[in-house]
Length: 99
Image (cartoon, rainbow, N blue to C red):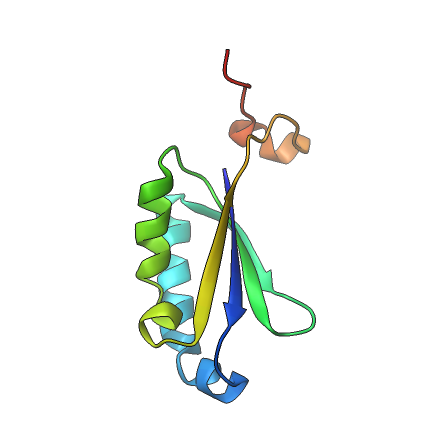
């Protein structure tokens, strides 16, 4: 599992110009089952996405295709973690520590 932290590198007005394209990009990745949660940070200086995947390089490729990245209004920090404990509703995403 991955935490994708977006930090805006441009004024929010520029971010807003790309918001519809960003939401379409998010929707497509929710449909694929890659993203399971997302939202704005508070204060509004970026956002957070929870993603499921086995391959960090694939997640990095996905992040690079974000219209916010293409439009040069945000930077990503990607953190991989092993979700060994989850709420019951997230049990399908629960992972085992490697042996």
